[in-house]
Amino acid sequence: MTIDSTRLAWAIAAASDSGGPRSLAGELLRDGADAALRRRWDQGSDGTCQAALVLAREMAERGVGVIVLGDPEYPDRLAETPTAPPLLFCWGNPALLRMPGVGMCGSRDVSERGLQAARTCGEAVARKGLTFISGYAKGVDTETHLAALGQGGRTIIVLAEGFVHFRQKKAFGREGLNAKHVLVLSQFAPSQSWTVGAAMTRNGVIAGLGQALVVIEAGETGGTLNAGMQAIRMGRPVLAHVGTP
Image 1 (cartoon, rainbow, N blue to C red):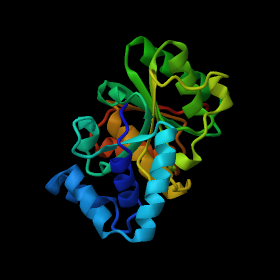
Image 2 (cartoon, rainbow, N blue to C red):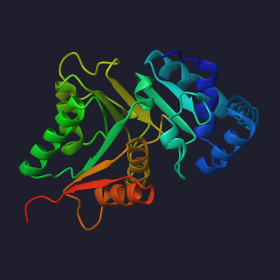
Image 3 (cartoon, rainbow, N blue to C red):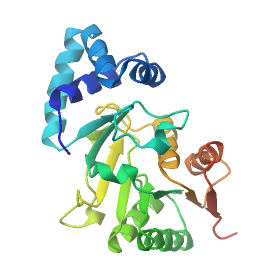
């Protein structure tokens, strides 16, 4: 993807603004992406803008760009949800955002039976020509990404933190992630760290991008259950693997 480092700096500054994502989303849809981002930039402090410029150069060198709510590249399925993120920082193939896909959420401490279910699902999704969408945690997330890619499929990794903290896992092999078959997304400012709240918020993107959501071994509380409930509220079909009694 072509990266406009100036626009990227505007987006980073806007993502760091204390006004919140809902306020920014409203401005983007009302005034247009570039106009709203530029106004936020002009209203920012010198320190915020300088830091954003430095970080934008670093992100651009790593191949990280941004898609803004209202851009033609922004996926319709996600834009139609009530919590559509105003900004999607991304690395890889953005065309995957407009392809049909299936989301997956599951426990980090999944059973072997649950891991096998995740692998089988990832392989089946890939064979059907669908894009697989999940997080980046150990367990279900990683296993299903690997299964889909192993079948020659496509996968979207949705982060619960900013790109400053993103590192490719050894599980994906010495060559790492293939930017043609993978898209890595983050709705958060690049410097934001992982938090439980961010992980819950991120689950809305996984549910929103997919045409359906598969949950593996959801507990009575926690992120997997939260993802399933968000998908139901969005009107997405939810398929559940409950694990061993």
